[in-house]
Length: 334
Ligand code: BGC
Image (tube, rainbow, N blue to C red; front, side, top):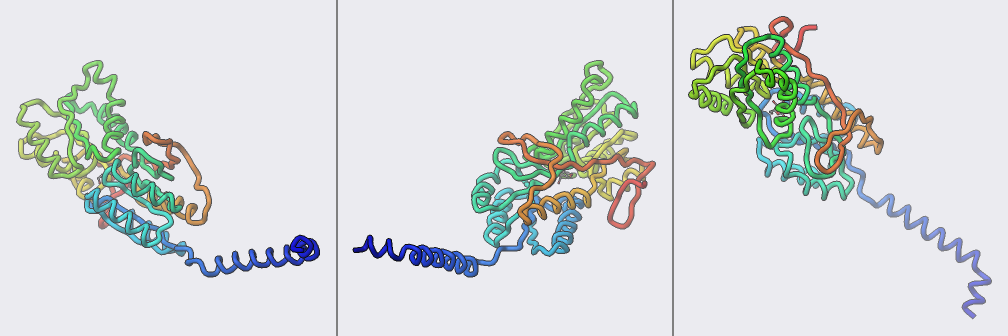
């Protein structure tokens, strides 16, 4: 009986089922929550001027492209940054640009969010040990290498003190690697003697303290290569207090304070990192991800878990011949 009914009306039944499924899908489409338009931006700190410039630029450019933007600064606390990332995910961010305080603690938060479809872009600092969707960088290996090459060319004397940034930041190690690789042959030949291989937390205060402590050893110092300008400034203070003059000093970031020191002759070079270019690189990638597209890839960076798709921005040397200070920014004169 039932079989006969189905056989007789099978066309009608198929039609009704098809219409029913279509109506259900249509209703689900209209009833679902609107797709979020939010891009999250999470910065480690505002300890150096470039982070403010880069977050401002990203916000401006992303808003211009029609996105909502939420920016957070973690004040150097890795725990606060993990909470802020969680908050950005809860606010509905579909893409988050992260400049990590610590390369090692964010993967659990990132992994959970990625399971919900959120994409993560590591901005300037790599995140280790898990899946990261993209890495935009000014390679610190290049920054260290260029600083070392400038020091070799300057023939400033063989006694070198190297001062690294925070070990929790991959950039500190990369800068050290780039510097040491460039100095390898000079050290082997004895043309350069690494008198000190010191470590800081990126701050001027810590650089001042480690340099002051080092100077108690009585070892000679002809040159100091620091991972950034805050380190260079801290080292200068310790050297000045010890009455040591004429040292070759390299920093990085082109902070206005360092550029003034270059003009005053107490710092030799800084490595300019184009903030606008790297901010725009992260915006470009975020925009692709928001539109569900694949961003262009220029290289791969090994983070111990995978080779992370990357793009690179080149640093430029600033010395007394090309330093240009305009208001609160410093750049190489072209
Ligand atoms: C950046 C430097 C910066 C430092 C401290 C590093 O990751 O590469 O440009 O000065 O962090 O914030």
